[in-house]
Image (cartoon, rainbow, N blue to C red; front, side):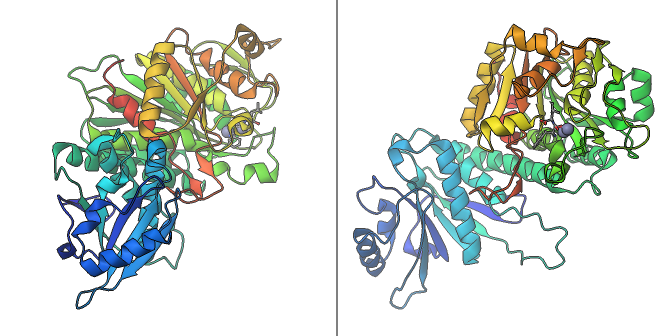
Length: 509
Ligand code: BES
Ligand code: ZN
Ligand code: ZN
């Protein structure tokens, strides 16, 4: 039996029977099932008769994400409560669908308030049984942590906390794969929930220095992770004037946060994850309207995803060297703030004309990716809440991507697919690159206009990447959402934590 990092316990058993006496039993059912799952035949006769009747008359809903609660009376025995979770068609059950089903199930369990929960894991398989024990267990273990997540640290009256004991019934018993799945799901869950909390924390409680402290706390919690924070004086002597320019309007000092995870014998060829850490984006002198500014505490969603991925990596301990680089500052307004028309020097040496102070993410990331290269990054993934244009293009459904390297992108895309996160790659074209270089006075222009806004923002950062294999991720629409999903509430989502952590686990690049 293992604690899951929340307070819940996960145990594994081979077979469920009526003697198991879990207070509530979770069962997956689908539209293409001919009858109730075989596993239930271990139940009492009277329970089976009752359930079969409900199945035949269609009371047990099989449609995707539908939940049916049921209590069966057994003579002389305690009540058996059941939660049936609809999977839609087993023949078209995807990993994302499976994760949502577990999310729905865990939420239903929490509403039930029954402390002992059984899950018939084998009733959650797709028709071809293509996921395997590890993936199915991982999806459940992840959902146990992420589905009930609430951001309630500021509520003086909190919902009552209850711990649950889940018993996973799986035919293969407590195999290596099942154990690995539980551990992997928990690593993802803890990383995702950390990223969510960082995004949800208001800007008054998460200035750049506090974000740096969160990074240091991750390093303290995990073997093989170390932290290094560059303060404002070091940034000055290094010449990080793009980051420093954005920071000029703020009372809070900028920070460059560096984490190193050494998964190999020697510190060579690290993969760098570079996250935008704008702890609040007012737009600066190119000020945002009120409704656009309201959620801008979430403008460190890229940094949150990188830190969440490091939390997960710390638990997973993969055999790869990984580096986190997070330029962090507020984007505010005062008498010394950056102004439209300013020309900036960068760490890389190229100059930038600031056409719009609200296009600040690409400025700090220019220094961020250049510093990653300086530190010897072999490959770079940058991630940011970068453009409103990406929200227009993809909504809160898919994360936008760009890349200069098909082979690296393929590995990345497989990682996203493997873990059920949706990504869409935008095209590049020499003409877009010309747009980024359309300044009359400097090398680059930080705001060439509304057209192709997500692509030009990405290629602006690309100008500091040079030949390094690179992936650019825009999570403006996906890091912070206005609707509840099966796997979490409104607000910070922790999007891309699982994908980045999975990428760090791949050995084929
Ligand atoms: N942080 C914003 C992007 C954003 C918008 C994130 C909506 C999440 C939701 C970014 O700094 C920004 O303001 N970008 C500008 C760029 C423009 C001035 C070229 C934008 O998208 O409007
Ligand atoms: Zn902005
Ligand atoms: Zn921003």
